[in-house]
Structure formats: structure tokens, C-alpha cells
Length: 160
Length: 303
Image (cartoon, rainbow over all chains, first blue to last red; front, top):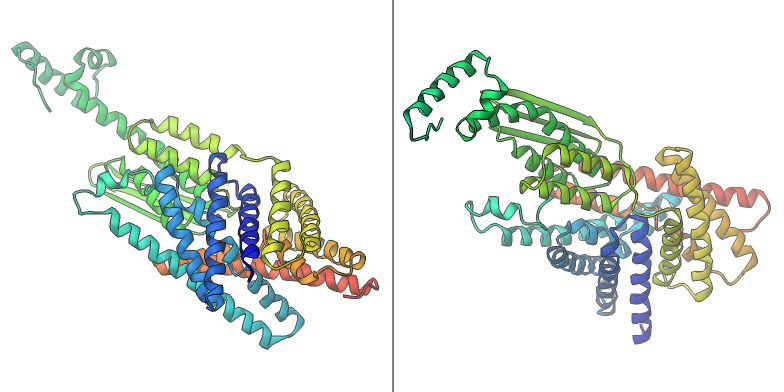
């Protein structure tokens, strides 16, 4: 992939997620950050693919980048992590393959359908795993001990 | 009870008041005069009166979060934090993708339970964010139960973006997603147009109170029809890329991913429920697109 196309696609992801933020009702002050989250995710996706990896690996790295970004920005802005996470993972999410799977099933192409279903499961699994890993890491970092839990729990970004 | 007043008469009055209050005939006035001395026991009484209010408020918070698409563990966490302010011995909160159960109980007071049936709606991050803010303020003691309740009702009623913003959102999402799927400039433009059609149909279907399946099927039927008509005019258009970018706002990728997240978290029932939801939505979208293609073929167009 050309260098220029990489940046065009990243910019495309930014604006696509900015638009999607309206659909998801993202609070106004965070619009820019959700767009950025999408751009970060897609950039990681493209760079992993450029390194010669499969779609699954690319989705994994993309979600890893988005989760790290979301956790960091959520702490800074005192907002729930979900706001940035849901919007950011969208470009890598296996929406197209879950659609293709069902569409092939309707058309009677069973083999192709199960291929796409498998791909959907693998990609969604890889993404969920990446998000889960980062969640767990941040949870570990949060609770220094039983004494601190009550205080930590009222910390804004963790809360809720 | 802390009868910390230094003088003897104060202590005597304290005992007298205690006896009277045990009989249940202490007047408001004597409470008032007693001030800080009696404050603790009066406060106990007031909180006891408010358990039901607290339960209702917590359940409302949970309901708003659930039907805005929050994860189950987040809902359970928030609700149990709010209920934690009751100081009851046992607090149990159990959330499903479509329902919420909560019980607080204490040997001295009894038990309060609330059950809510929750309908899932479109993801609304603004509501999740606002409820989170309210619950944080409440847990830090900056808000009373009734204030929090009022604020939550307001959150449930308000909308962050009007119809125009939604239309812009759909057009931007579909148009720019075409770039990510490797579309040309023409593909982006047509995907944007198709996205506008989708936004209009989705708005109309929402107003008619269609259920989820019909809403998605109607939206995807309309967008596929629009894409096929555009393909008829502009032969160079990449039909596959346009349709896939246009269904992006509806496709249940996020639901599917959060289903797996819930499963990994140990919330098996809501994980399965969300997976089923994802399949239903995907089925509706594929059904709509398939029906449009079939209708187009019957009308004599070539796909």
C-alpha cells in the first residue's frame, strides 16, 4: 500500500467515526476524541496488515491500540471507557463478514457462508480478547490492595 | 446513642425523649429542639423511609444504562454502588441483557426487591455517560436521592442530536467507510447518497415504531434498492463496496464483540442473548438486501 493511501484511509476512518458518533449519541465534548480513536484503530490495522499479517492479527492489534487509547483518554476526561471503545473498534469490527455470511446462507452458498461465519467468529474473538486483556491490565493497576478499594472505586473513570 | 451534652438536665431530657420515641409519640417539635443530640436516631428513621426511593432510583439508572446498550457488568457495578449507599448488609444486583433484578436486605430492616423488564434500544453513549456522572455525584454525597431521580428522568427524556445531525452522521459514516473498503471517489459519493436514503428510512421506521427486525430489514431494503438504481446509472460503481459501507451503521459488529466480551467476563446469559441479537439483526439486514435484489431482478434490472 502506498504511503499516501495509508493517510487517506486513516483520515477516512476519522471522519467515518465522527459521523458514526452522531448515530451513537456521543456527548458533544468528546466528538473529536471518538474520531481520533477510530483513526488510531484503523492506522494500527493497516500497519499490521502491511507487516504481512492476517486480518485476525490486524483486528487484534487494532483493538489493542483502541483499548489502550480509550482507557488513557477516559481517565483524562473522566468519562466511561465505552464511549471511546465502541466508536473506535467499529472499523475493524467484522460487520461485513457477518452480513456476507447470512447473505450467502440465504442464497444457498453454504460453504461460503460457513467460511464467513468462521471469519466473523475469529475476528470478533480476537478483538474481544484484546479488549479483555487491556481491561484486566487496567483493573490490576487500579486496586493496590483491599484498603484502597473504596477510594479507588469512586475514581471517575473506573466508576460505572 | 451519644448523650454528649455536659449538663445533667440535658442527659435527663435525653433519656426521657428516648423513652417517648420508643413509644412512638415523639413530636416533630421535640426532635427539632433536641438538635444534634437526637440527630443520629432521626437520621436513621429518615433513611429507613427512603429505601424504596433509593431502590427506584438505582433501578432507573440501571434501566437507562441497559437500554442504551451498556455492558452488563457496568450496569451491575453502577447499580450496586448506588445501593451501597443504603448501608444494608447484603446487596445483590443481577442484570441481564433484557432485565434487571436487585435486592437489598438487612436483618434489622427487612428486604427490598425491584425487578425491571428492559427493552434494548439503539446504543446511546450520551445517556451512559450522563448516568455515570449522576451515580458518581450521588455516591460522593453531592446529591440526594430525589435530586438524582429527577436528573435521571431528565436524562431519559433528552436527546443529544436531532434528526438533521443523524442524517449527517449516516451520510458521513457510509461515505467515508467506502474509502476504508477500497472504494473510488464515485463509490464514496454514491455510498453517501445511499446513506441518506437509509437515514430517511430509519427515521420514518423509528417514528412508526417498527420492531428491530422490521426496522433493519426496511432500512437495508431501501439502501440496497438505492444502490442498485445508482449502479444502473453509473456502471463504474462498485456495488459490493457501496452496499457493505452503507449497511455499516446497522450491522451488529459491536453487539457481537460485546457479546464475546460478556462471555469472557463470565456473564454467560447476556453473552448468549447479545449473540442472538446480533444474529437477528444480521438476518434482518441480509434479508432486506436479498429482497431488494430479488425485487430488482423481477422488475427487469440486471444485478
